[in-house]
Image 1 (tube, rainbow, N blue to C red):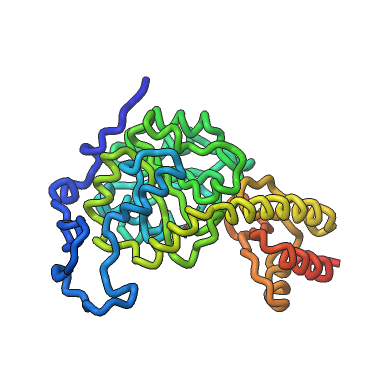
Image 2 (image 1 turned 120 degrees about the vertical axis):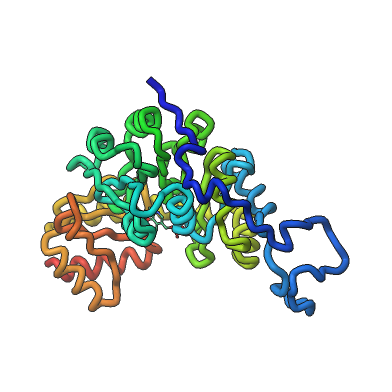
Length: 348
Ligand SMILES: Cc1ncc(COP(=O)(O)O)c(C=O)c1O
């Protein structure tokens, strides 16, 4: 039986009562000759004016790119801001809870701690697949957010779409589907399923495939009702002018990005094959992302030796199901060659 998520029911009461702060640039948006409404320095230097608080041009470009209506788009200062705003909108501190899968992206739990919200862990199966029973066992009437990261960091795999849809049909809380790595994947994401699930929030980012980690630009896609809630509680000018301009330019000239993603995919396959030839490597896990999770003998030792050579990878050995594992981001062809050369020397 399908249970529909009722946003007004799960929203925090204080947020439901809140009327949004309207900044000077919110109130009047038409072209004008003289702007004396926002106490800015009037002498033009390209950045003396506040940015568009509603990011209209950028939202339109993103909506077109993702084939959704602009009313379904939210832009955050990195997807970390989108995730944080979801906590602040829906989770009552010391009362509500969220569910994260383990292992997954660490910020979900850190944000729970910052927001004083109980964070419950539902382990993935040993093959990294989603265990919906584990998730449902942890869920109760105070569960507000369930975080699924697909393709998952640090395991690299995509969850079975049927398992995700089963959860979406079963729970009353929001399901936050973090698709940070979707641009590297050849499997379809969930963005075209938005209209079918009122509790679905998709989070993406320009930090990975789009090559713009430095400008901090994260994306949220959800029903208009959820987007309106996030709009109401976001800081008025959360996306600065330079980030909006840079993102717009890159989206309008996306050929380079497409080419780079192609190269990264090819490099990933080459890297996988080369790693599998090293006797120290026990397993290279399948990956729909721009990194490889590699089980390797003496992972901690290799990690330290690589650092001594000036190469930093991520040691994931301490976390569930990732015993003796390094997470290696795919670099440029030259960087990947260098990594392999050093790894060969270290492990011989
Ligand atoms: C799964 C996942 N989500 C979100 C983020 C953060 O993205 P952003 O740079 O947009 O804050 C990361 C960064 O590593 C990530 O791995």
